[in-house]
Length: 402
Image (cartoon, rainbow, N blue to C red):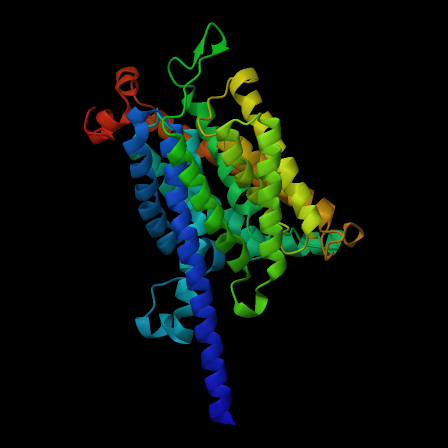
Protein backbone atom coordinates (compact mmCIF):
# COMPACT_ATOMS: atom_id res chain seq x y z
CA UNK A 1 0.00 0.00 0.00
CA UNK A 2 2.84 2.35 0.83
CA UNK A 3 4.42 1.71 -2.57
CA UNK A 4 1.08 2.34 -4.26
CA UNK A 5 0.62 5.63 -2.42
CA UNK A 6 4.15 6.65 -3.36
CA UNK A 7 3.54 5.80 -7.01
CA UNK A 8 0.30 7.80 -7.06
CA UNK A 9 1.99 10.77 -5.42
CA UNK A 10 4.83 10.61 -7.95
CA UNK A 11 2.33 10.48 -10.81
CA UNK A 12 0.44 13.51 -9.42
CA UNK A 13 3.60 15.59 -8.99
CA UNK A 14 4.88 14.59 -12.43
CA UNK A 15 1.55 15.37 -14.09
CA UNK A 16 1.28 18.76 -12.40
CA UNK A 17 4.83 19.63 -13.43
CA UNK A 18 4.12 18.72 -17.05
CA UNK A 19 0.81 20.61 -16.97
CA UNK A 20 2.28 23.88 -15.77
CA UNK A 21 5.32 23.43 -18.06
CA UNK A 22 3.00 23.24 -21.07
CA UNK A 23 1.30 26.39 -19.82
CA UNK A 24 4.65 28.15 -19.51
CA UNK A 25 5.59 27.19 -23.06
CA UNK A 26 2.23 28.40 -24.41
CA UNK A 27 2.59 31.78 -22.70
CA UNK A 28 6.23 31.97 -23.83
CA UNK A 29 4.93 31.56 -27.39
CA UNK A 30 2.65 34.56 -26.80
CA UNK A 31 5.75 36.75 -26.82
CA UNK A 32 6.08 35.97 -30.52
CA UNK A 33 2.53 37.28 -30.77
CA UNK A 34 3.50 40.51 -29.02
CA UNK A 35 6.45 40.83 -31.41
CA UNK A 36 4.52 40.32 -34.65
CA UNK A 37 1.60 42.47 -33.52
CA UNK A 38 4.08 45.30 -33.06
CA UNK A 39 6.02 44.51 -36.23
CA UNK A 40 2.83 44.66 -38.28
CA UNK A 41 1.64 47.91 -36.69
CA UNK A 42 4.80 50.07 -36.73
CA UNK A 43 6.26 51.58 -39.88
CA UNK A 44 8.75 49.44 -41.80
CA UNK A 45 11.76 51.41 -40.58
CA UNK A 46 11.05 50.22 -37.01
CA UNK A 47 10.31 46.52 -37.55
CA UNK A 48 13.73 45.17 -36.57
CA UNK A 49 13.62 47.22 -33.37
CA UNK A 50 10.22 45.76 -32.46
CA UNK A 51 11.51 42.20 -32.81
CA UNK A 52 14.73 42.98 -30.95
CA UNK A 53 12.97 44.70 -28.03
CA UNK A 54 10.64 41.80 -27.27
CA UNK A 55 13.41 39.20 -27.18
CA UNK A 56 15.90 41.36 -25.27
CA UNK A 57 13.19 42.40 -22.79
CA UNK A 58 12.36 38.75 -22.15
CA UNK A 59 16.01 37.93 -21.39
CA UNK A 60 16.36 40.86 -18.98
CA UNK A 61 12.99 40.02 -17.38
CA UNK A 62 14.14 36.46 -16.72
CA UNK A 63 17.20 37.57 -14.78
CA UNK A 64 15.35 40.31 -12.89
CA UNK A 65 12.55 37.96 -11.88
CA UNK A 66 14.81 34.98 -11.09
CA UNK A 67 17.16 36.88 -8.77
CA UNK A 68 14.85 39.53 -7.28
CA UNK A 69 11.23 39.70 -8.43
CA UNK A 70 10.09 36.17 -7.57
CA UNK A 71 11.59 36.53 -4.11
CA UNK A 72 9.69 39.79 -3.55
CA UNK A 73 6.42 38.21 -4.72
CA UNK A 74 6.62 34.80 -3.05
CA UNK A 75 9.59 34.84 -0.69
CA UNK A 76 11.28 32.07 -2.71
CA UNK A 77 14.99 32.14 -3.49
CA UNK A 78 16.69 29.84 -5.98
CA UNK A 79 20.07 30.08 -4.28
CA UNK A 80 19.71 26.47 -3.15
CA UNK A 81 21.45 23.23 -4.21
CA UNK A 82 19.99 21.62 -7.33
CA UNK A 83 18.99 18.62 -5.20
CA UNK A 84 16.60 20.89 -3.28
CA UNK A 85 15.31 22.73 -6.34
CA UNK A 86 14.53 19.51 -8.21
CA UNK A 87 12.24 18.11 -5.47
CA UNK A 88 8.76 17.05 -6.63
CA UNK A 89 9.99 16.81 -10.23
CA UNK A 90 11.11 20.44 -10.08
CA UNK A 91 7.53 21.72 -9.84
CA UNK A 92 8.68 24.85 -7.98
CA UNK A 93 11.09 25.69 -10.81
CA UNK A 94 8.47 25.20 -13.50
CA UNK A 95 6.00 27.31 -11.52
CA UNK A 96 8.62 30.07 -11.58
CA UNK A 97 8.94 29.61 -15.37
CA UNK A 98 5.16 29.91 -15.77
CA UNK A 99 4.88 33.04 -13.63
CA UNK A 100 7.96 34.51 -15.31
CA UNK A 101 6.14 34.47 -18.65
CA UNK A 102 3.43 36.60 -17.01
CA UNK A 103 5.99 39.02 -15.55
CA UNK A 104 7.78 39.33 -18.89
CA UNK A 105 4.49 40.24 -20.54
CA UNK A 106 4.68 43.60 -18.76
CA UNK A 107 7.60 45.03 -20.80
CA UNK A 108 6.18 43.34 -23.92
CA UNK A 109 2.98 45.31 -23.36
CA UNK A 110 4.87 48.56 -22.74
CA UNK A 111 6.94 48.02 -25.88
CA UNK A 112 3.93 48.52 -28.14
CA UNK A 113 3.05 51.86 -26.58
CA UNK A 114 6.50 53.42 -26.78
CA UNK A 115 7.41 52.09 -30.23
CA UNK A 116 9.26 54.09 -32.89
CA UNK A 117 10.89 56.69 -30.64
CA UNK A 118 12.27 55.05 -27.48
CA UNK A 119 15.93 54.35 -26.80
CA UNK A 120 16.92 50.69 -26.59
CA UNK A 121 19.30 50.59 -23.62
CA UNK A 122 17.21 52.71 -21.25
CA UNK A 123 14.15 50.58 -22.05
CA UNK A 124 16.07 47.48 -20.97
CA UNK A 125 16.94 49.30 -17.74
CA UNK A 126 13.24 50.12 -17.25
CA UNK A 127 12.39 46.45 -17.85
CA UNK A 128 14.85 45.37 -15.15
CA UNK A 129 13.44 47.80 -12.58
CA UNK A 130 9.80 47.04 -13.36
CA UNK A 131 10.13 43.24 -13.38
CA UNK A 132 12.38 43.21 -10.32
CA UNK A 133 10.39 45.62 -8.13
CA UNK A 134 7.18 47.26 -9.41
CA UNK A 135 5.31 44.26 -10.81
CA UNK A 136 6.37 41.78 -8.07
CA UNK A 137 5.17 44.15 -5.35
CA UNK A 138 1.62 44.15 -6.70
CA UNK A 139 1.74 40.49 -7.76
CA UNK A 140 2.71 39.43 -4.24
CA UNK A 141 0.07 41.70 -2.75
CA UNK A 142 -2.70 40.00 -4.75
CA UNK A 143 -1.55 36.46 -5.51
CA UNK A 144 0.47 35.72 -2.38
CA UNK A 145 -1.45 37.70 0.24
CA UNK A 146 1.53 39.90 1.13
CA UNK A 147 1.01 42.73 3.66
CA UNK A 148 -2.44 41.43 4.63
CA UNK A 149 -4.43 43.33 1.99
CA UNK A 150 -6.37 40.29 0.80
CA UNK A 151 -7.12 39.16 4.34
CA UNK A 152 -8.42 42.64 5.18
CA UNK A 153 -10.64 42.77 2.09
CA UNK A 154 -12.08 39.36 2.91
CA UNK A 155 -12.76 40.31 6.52
CA UNK A 156 -14.24 43.69 5.61
CA UNK A 157 -16.20 42.91 2.42
CA UNK A 158 -16.69 39.16 2.51
CA UNK A 159 -14.25 38.27 -0.29
CA UNK A 160 -10.69 39.03 -1.31
CA UNK A 161 -9.83 40.72 -4.61
CA UNK A 162 -10.24 38.03 -7.27
CA UNK A 163 -8.02 38.04 -10.35
CA UNK A 164 -7.71 34.46 -11.58
CA UNK A 165 -5.39 35.04 -14.54
CA UNK A 166 -4.32 38.66 -14.36
CA UNK A 167 -6.76 41.14 -15.92
CA UNK A 168 -5.44 43.68 -13.42
CA UNK A 169 -2.27 42.06 -12.02
CA UNK A 170 -0.70 41.59 -15.47
CA UNK A 171 -2.65 43.49 -18.14
CA UNK A 172 -3.92 46.42 -16.12
CA UNK A 173 -0.53 46.99 -14.52
CA UNK A 174 1.23 46.70 -17.89
CA UNK A 175 -1.20 49.10 -19.55
CA UNK A 176 -0.96 51.80 -16.89
CA UNK A 177 2.83 51.50 -16.74
CA UNK A 178 2.80 52.00 -20.51
CA UNK A 179 0.64 55.12 -20.18
CA UNK A 180 3.21 56.69 -17.86
CA UNK A 181 5.99 55.89 -20.32
CA UNK A 182 4.04 57.22 -23.31
CA UNK A 183 3.21 60.48 -21.53
CA UNK A 184 6.85 61.06 -20.57
CA UNK A 185 8.08 60.22 -24.09
CA UNK A 186 5.65 62.44 -25.96
CA UNK A 187 4.22 61.79 -29.40
CA UNK A 188 6.20 60.77 -32.47
CA UNK A 189 7.51 63.54 -34.69
CA UNK A 190 4.96 64.41 -37.36
CA UNK A 191 2.11 62.54 -35.70
CA UNK A 192 0.12 65.75 -35.22
CA UNK A 193 0.10 68.68 -37.60
CA UNK A 194 -1.81 71.86 -36.78
CA UNK A 195 -3.53 69.95 -33.98
CA UNK A 196 -4.79 67.23 -36.32
CA UNK A 197 -3.83 63.56 -36.40
CA UNK A 198 -1.59 62.45 -39.27
CA UNK A 199 -2.20 58.82 -40.21
CA UNK A 200 0.76 56.45 -39.84
CA UNK A 201 -0.52 53.34 -41.60
CA UNK A 202 0.44 49.88 -40.29
CA UNK A 203 3.34 48.44 -42.27
CA UNK A 204 2.09 44.88 -42.56
CA UNK A 205 -1.48 43.75 -41.86
CA UNK A 206 -0.64 40.02 -42.31
CA UNK A 207 2.05 40.28 -39.60
CA UNK A 208 -0.39 42.16 -37.37
CA UNK A 209 -2.98 39.41 -37.88
CA UNK A 210 -0.37 36.70 -37.25
CA UNK A 211 0.57 38.34 -33.96
CA UNK A 212 -3.07 38.47 -32.93
CA UNK A 213 -3.62 34.80 -33.73
CA UNK A 214 -0.51 33.68 -31.83
CA UNK A 215 -1.70 35.64 -28.80
CA UNK A 216 -5.22 34.20 -29.07
CA UNK A 217 -3.97 30.60 -29.10
CA UNK A 218 -1.42 31.14 -26.34
CA UNK A 219 -4.04 32.85 -24.19
CA UNK A 220 -5.70 29.52 -23.48
CA UNK A 221 -2.48 28.53 -21.73
CA UNK A 222 -2.47 31.91 -20.00
CA UNK A 223 -6.01 31.44 -18.64
CA UNK A 224 -6.71 27.71 -18.36
CA UNK A 225 -3.33 26.80 -16.93
CA UNK A 226 -3.49 29.53 -14.32
CA UNK A 227 -5.07 26.72 -12.28
CA UNK A 228 -1.42 25.53 -11.96
CA UNK A 229 -2.47 21.92 -11.22
CA UNK A 230 -4.39 19.26 -13.12
CA UNK A 231 -6.83 18.96 -10.22
CA UNK A 232 -7.74 22.62 -10.58
CA UNK A 233 -8.22 22.71 -14.36
CA UNK A 234 -11.66 23.86 -15.49
CA UNK A 235 -13.48 23.66 -18.80
CA UNK A 236 -15.44 26.70 -17.64
CA UNK A 237 -12.28 28.81 -17.95
CA UNK A 238 -11.67 27.55 -21.49
CA UNK A 239 -15.21 28.23 -22.73
CA UNK A 240 -15.40 31.60 -20.98
CA UNK A 241 -12.14 32.59 -22.64
CA UNK A 242 -13.47 31.46 -26.01
CA UNK A 243 -16.74 33.38 -25.72
CA UNK A 244 -15.05 36.54 -24.42
CA UNK A 245 -12.68 36.38 -27.37
CA UNK A 246 -15.61 36.02 -29.78
CA UNK A 247 -17.53 38.84 -28.08
CA UNK A 248 -14.55 41.16 -28.35
CA UNK A 249 -14.02 40.25 -32.00
CA UNK A 250 -17.59 40.94 -33.09
CA UNK A 251 -17.91 44.15 -31.08
CA UNK A 252 -14.68 45.54 -32.52
CA UNK A 253 -15.77 44.52 -36.01
CA UNK A 254 -19.05 46.39 -35.68
CA UNK A 255 -17.90 49.46 -33.75
CA UNK A 256 -14.64 49.64 -35.71
CA UNK A 257 -16.47 49.50 -39.05
CA UNK A 258 -14.50 46.58 -40.51
CA UNK A 259 -11.10 48.12 -39.76
CA UNK A 260 -8.63 45.17 -39.69
CA UNK A 261 -6.55 46.74 -36.92
CA UNK A 262 -9.58 46.98 -34.64
CA UNK A 263 -10.82 43.56 -35.73
CA UNK A 264 -7.60 41.82 -34.75
CA UNK A 265 -7.28 43.68 -31.45
CA UNK A 266 -10.92 43.03 -30.49
CA UNK A 267 -10.36 39.39 -29.48
CA UNK A 268 -7.37 40.46 -27.39
CA UNK A 269 -9.50 43.06 -25.60
CA UNK A 270 -12.06 40.38 -24.77
CA UNK A 271 -9.38 38.01 -23.51
CA UNK A 272 -7.77 40.70 -21.37
CA UNK A 273 -11.10 41.45 -19.72
CA UNK A 274 -12.11 37.86 -19.00
CA UNK A 275 -8.85 36.85 -17.30
CA UNK A 276 -9.97 37.97 -13.84
CA UNK A 277 -13.31 36.18 -13.69
CA UNK A 278 -12.90 33.38 -16.23
CA UNK A 279 -13.17 30.79 -13.45
CA UNK A 280 -16.37 32.31 -11.98
CA UNK A 281 -18.55 33.72 -14.75
CA UNK A 282 -21.33 32.07 -16.67
CA UNK A 283 -20.35 31.82 -20.37
CA UNK A 284 -22.97 34.43 -21.30
CA UNK A 285 -21.43 36.79 -18.74
CA UNK A 286 -18.04 36.14 -20.36
CA UNK A 287 -19.51 36.90 -23.80
CA UNK A 288 -20.88 40.23 -22.55
CA UNK A 289 -17.61 41.03 -20.79
CA UNK A 290 -15.69 40.46 -24.01
CA UNK A 291 -18.14 42.41 -26.15
CA UNK A 292 -17.99 45.45 -23.88
CA UNK A 293 -14.18 45.23 -23.89
CA UNK A 294 -14.05 45.11 -27.70
CA UNK A 295 -16.22 48.20 -28.01
CA UNK A 296 -14.32 49.94 -25.20
CA UNK A 297 -11.02 49.38 -27.00
CA UNK A 298 -12.22 50.89 -30.27
CA UNK A 299 -13.69 53.94 -28.53
CA UNK A 300 -10.72 54.48 -26.22
CA UNK A 301 -8.09 53.99 -28.94
CA UNK A 302 -9.83 56.54 -31.16
CA UNK A 303 -10.24 59.02 -28.30
CA UNK A 304 -6.63 58.54 -27.17
CA UNK A 305 -5.20 59.30 -30.61
CA UNK A 306 -7.63 61.97 -31.79
CA UNK A 307 -9.12 63.77 -28.82
CA UNK A 308 -6.45 63.43 -26.13
CA UNK A 309 -3.47 63.32 -28.53
CA UNK A 310 -1.69 60.57 -26.61
CA UNK A 311 0.51 58.72 -29.10
CA UNK A 312 0.16 55.17 -27.80
CA UNK A 313 1.26 53.35 -30.97
CA UNK A 314 -0.47 49.97 -30.47
CA UNK A 315 -3.12 51.28 -28.12
CA UNK A 316 -1.78 49.27 -25.19
CA UNK A 317 -3.33 51.54 -22.58
CA UNK A 318 -6.84 51.13 -24.04
CA UNK A 319 -6.28 47.41 -24.69
CA UNK A 320 -4.50 46.30 -21.54
CA UNK A 321 -4.97 49.22 -19.15
CA UNK A 322 -8.65 50.05 -19.63
CA UNK A 323 -9.87 46.59 -20.64
CA UNK A 324 -7.89 45.16 -17.72
CA UNK A 325 -9.68 47.56 -15.37
CA UNK A 326 -13.01 46.56 -16.91
CA UNK A 327 -12.06 42.92 -16.36
CA UNK A 328 -11.45 43.46 -12.66
CA UNK A 329 -14.83 45.17 -12.32
CA UNK A 330 -16.66 42.69 -14.58
CA UNK A 331 -15.49 39.85 -12.35
CA UNK A 332 -17.31 41.49 -9.45
CA UNK A 333 -20.46 41.84 -11.55
CA UNK A 334 -20.76 38.67 -13.64
CA UNK A 335 -19.17 36.48 -10.97
CA UNK A 336 -22.22 36.96 -8.75
CA UNK A 337 -24.59 34.00 -8.39
CA UNK A 338 -27.52 36.30 -9.26
CA UNK A 339 -26.04 36.61 -12.78
CA UNK A 340 -25.22 32.93 -13.15
CA UNK A 341 -21.71 33.06 -11.72
CA UNK A 342 -20.20 30.87 -9.03
CA UNK A 343 -20.17 33.66 -6.42
CA UNK A 344 -17.61 34.22 -3.71
CA UNK A 345 -16.66 37.62 -5.08
CA UNK A 346 -17.25 41.16 -3.82
CA UNK A 347 -17.74 44.08 -6.19
CA UNK A 348 -16.33 46.45 -3.56
CA UNK A 349 -13.18 44.37 -3.22
CA UNK A 350 -12.88 44.28 -7.00
CA UNK A 351 -13.12 48.06 -7.20
CA UNK A 352 -10.52 48.54 -4.46
CA UNK A 353 -8.07 46.01 -5.89
CA UNK A 354 -8.44 47.39 -9.39
CA UNK A 355 -7.93 50.99 -8.24
CA UNK A 356 -4.85 49.95 -6.29
CA UNK A 357 -3.40 48.32 -9.41
CA UNK A 358 -3.85 51.58 -11.32
CA UNK A 359 -2.14 53.60 -8.58
CA UNK A 360 0.83 51.24 -8.20
CA UNK A 361 1.39 51.01 -11.96
CA UNK A 362 0.96 54.68 -12.76
CA UNK A 363 3.15 55.91 -9.90
CA UNK A 364 5.69 53.16 -10.52
CA UNK A 365 5.83 53.99 -14.22
CA UNK A 366 6.25 57.70 -13.60
CA UNK A 367 9.03 56.97 -11.11
CA UNK A 368 10.96 54.51 -13.32
CA UNK A 369 10.64 56.38 -16.61
CA UNK A 370 10.99 59.77 -14.91
CA UNK A 371 14.28 58.63 -13.36
CA UNK A 372 15.59 57.29 -16.66
CA UNK A 373 14.44 60.38 -18.57
CA UNK A 374 16.38 62.59 -16.17
CA UNK A 375 19.54 60.46 -16.30
CA UNK A 376 20.03 58.36 -19.43
CA UNK A 377 17.32 59.89 -21.58
CA UNK A 378 14.57 57.72 -22.99
CA UNK A 379 13.93 59.16 -26.45
CA UNK A 380 15.74 58.93 -29.76
CA UNK A 381 16.97 62.16 -31.30
CA UNK A 382 14.87 63.75 -34.03
CA UNK A 383 17.34 62.55 -36.67
CA UNK A 384 17.40 58.97 -35.30
CA UNK A 385 13.64 58.87 -35.24
CA UNK A 386 13.46 60.17 -38.80
CA UNK A 387 15.74 57.41 -40.13
CA UNK A 388 14.02 54.84 -37.93
CA UNK A 389 15.08 52.76 -34.95
CA UNK A 390 16.21 49.90 -37.20
CA UNK A 391 19.07 51.82 -38.83
CA UNK A 392 19.73 54.15 -35.89
CA UNK A 393 20.04 51.41 -33.26
CA UNK A 394 20.55 48.07 -35.02
CA UNK A 395 22.27 49.29 -38.20
CA UNK A 396 20.15 47.11 -40.47
CA UNK A 397 16.71 47.30 -42.04
CA UNK A 398 14.00 44.66 -42.08
CA UNK A 399 14.39 44.01 -45.81
CA UNK A 400 17.43 43.93 -48.03
CA UNK A 401 16.36 46.81 -50.30
CA UNK A 402 16.41 49.42 -47.51
